[in-house]
Each structure stands twice: as C-alpha cells, then as structure tokens.
Length: 509
Image (cartoon, rainbow, N blue to C red; front, side, top):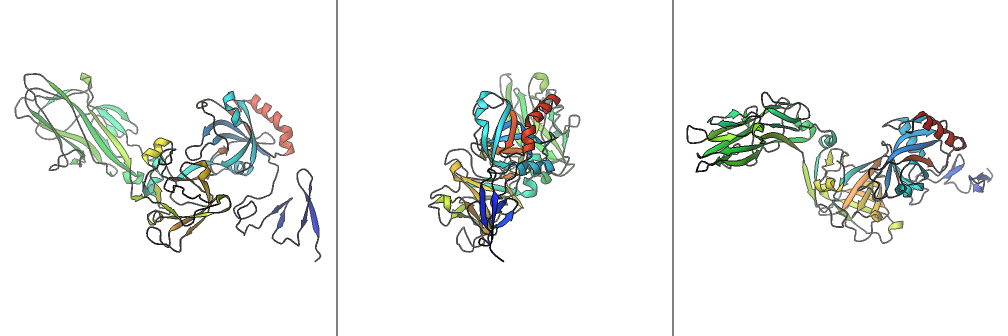
C-alpha cells in the first residue's frame, strides 16, 4: 500500500498534514489525532491523559452559589450548579447518577477553559468572573488526613480507623441525643435504690425518652451505627446540718453500668457526701457519667439513687426546675475506633530533584498498609474537624486520579496515577507494602507525615475553578453562568434569547 498524506484542519482552518503510514503509533478520531494510550507518558498524549478531541459543547451551566474548597483544595472556588441548560433552552438539574450529571462532567472537563458571567453579585466577586481553568467537576471527599492547620508542623502523629461499614455511616449515624430535667424539688431519705424522676423533657430528637417512666429506650443496635453511647447525671443538691451521702447508679435494664467517676472498690456507684453545721444550707453540684458502650434494641436506661443520712430526718434535697435549678439526665455519643496507627506513615525511596519531569513512589508503612482496603475508614481527627474538614465517609482505598498534598502547601499537590505493592524493603516498610506512584515528583525534604489524601467524586454538582474565593464574600449571593470555551454555533446564537426566556419564566430567580 502506497504512503499517503491526509490534511486535516483545526478550528481556524490551519492545515495539519498527517503522514499516517510513517506514524503507526497514531490513529484518527473525527478531526483529531490521539496518542498511544497504551504507553505511559507525562505529557498529554499518553495513558491517563484526556482525549485530544475537541468538540463544540451544547450545554452551559447556571450556578446559584460559590464556596471555598479548603482545606482539601487550597485557594480555589466551587460553583454550585443548579441547572444545566442546552442550546434549545431546556433546563435539567444535575443529580446523583443522572444523565444530566453525566453531561455536566462531559461538558466541563478538568483543565479546560470556561467563561464565567454573573447575574447577581457585588464587585467583590469580580475575580471569580471571566475566563478560568477547571480543576474538576464533582464533590470533594477526604480519604485520609493528618492536617490540623496551615502551619508546616500542624499535623497529628496518630490516626484511628473504624470498620468501613461503621465509619461510612458517621454522617448519617443515628442521633441518640436527649436531655431531661427533674421537675419538682424533693427531700430524699430512701435507703434502697429507686428511680430518679427526670420528668421534664427538654431535648429528645427521636422521642426515645419517656418523661412519665423516666426511661430512655434504645430504638436500634448502636453497633450498627458505629456509635458508643454514654449517659451523664448532673444534680443540684441542697443539704442541712446532718451529714448525708447520695449514691447514684445509671442502669441498663436494672443493672448498673460502669461509671467514669465511681470509686475503685465500687465501679458502678458514684457517691458524694454533704454535711454542714449551724443550720445553714449547703448548695452543691454532683455529676457522674457512664463509660460509653454498645446497646441493643430495646435496652432501657434509668437513673437509680439512694441516700444515707445517719438520721431518720432527711436533710438532703435534690432540686428541680420548680426552684429554678437544673438536675439533668442526658446522653452523649462517640464513634468507634478499631485501629490506631502512629507515624511515620510514608517513606520515599528516591526524592525528586526535578519534580516537574519525574514521578515519586510513596511506600506506606506496614501499619498503614494493613488498613488499605474497603474495610477500613479513618475516623476524622477532632483537630482536623476544627480546621474545616468534613467527616470522612470513603474507605482507605486510594485510586488513580486521587490527590495527595503535603504540608498544606498548594505547590506540593501530587496526582496518584498508579497503585502497587513494594517488592523489597525492611523494617516498617516491607515487601508487599502499599505503594503510590505520584506526579509531579515529591521535592526533597517534604514532610510526609503532614498530608491530606483526597479525591473529586464526579457524582456531585460542583464545578471547581482555579481561582481563590475573595475574602469578605461569605454569605453574599452570587449567581451566573459558566460556558465552555468552545460552544456550538446554535448555542452561541441562542444564548441571549435563552437567558431572556428563562428570566421571564422565573427559572433564574
């Protein structure tokens, strides 16, 4: 077969001669040339790269809010997409697992240029308008994090993990919160345990507390929610001349639970003694709490008390709301941590001297490797939550396309392009350890224990653009449109009419 040359044209009609026979690594797709996707490269022609094909897009997006993307992504802005609109003016709402969401992802690819215009917003938002580059489309999800602040040394050296079927439910875990108060103040003298009457319901989100029987009943198995539940009793006490001791137990189905502040020789009973002289009353508080634990469906919790006053005349009063005091019975809950690991978390065999042209292989510690699966999810550190991270719901199972950042430094963001296992090593990094190949390469001296591993899940209606949200705009409205750089002629011709039509209909109000 004779060699031949085919001429294609770009958008501006510039000819591109292509000698097909002399370039067997290339093939044709429409009006574009695609590189060999079986070859790993670090440019835009190989594996992991986006297609070189360009097409004129037929959709634009209407957004009705913007937000910062920190702390996961530094100095960028997420635009909340309310509608996706086609060249005929048809309006759809991008929702999870919908064709509209698929179209949103296809029309606004990563690293493409878009144009942003506004309908409503102050001049403070001006930096967010105009031509911008897309970082991604979707919802940001943290996979693993030690960061607790923006300083280089703001990180934790211990991480805890829960089983994924527990931890992935943390955002929607059942809320066992309730709080009840004692209504009527009463002198007490009983020397056997009786139920304490907290008859004023203050907070009970799911109506599991009975103010008539003074009992909290569990509606489900707390283990299924990844939750440990504890109870606190806080009493307001008044005592007179005679020495009095009050005994408190928090009981499950009538059996006392272990308490945090019980005495060593009686781990299920909290006690406190009151006594004064001269006929003057003493007012004091008394608090005790149970150790957080698991409960089964139908378990019933009550507070039991008795007193010992050494005299037939009771001189100890538990005060209630009728005297303006608060004696409170309430719950609290924590999440289950099944595994704890300590740093170091990662090691690097060879640092990159030229990060822009090299990759780096990160090797996980033996302990971290042991948690690599869909079975374990990190429990978000309290200090990381305070810094702004949301609850982690994804298991520790990094994927190609995820990102890992070190030292809260936006110049140290690396894309994972290959997951593997180490074939050599010793000590905490042994053969079989999890490895992540990342680009660009990791610069010498980077603090590997200070990191955040995250991904942008395409099942979310946000377009993330590479521009920092201006300060002073929190709580202020911004609405407008995002258009791909290249739109179809039909959409370009109809754009203004579409906006006028949707405004007249009230769709964009």
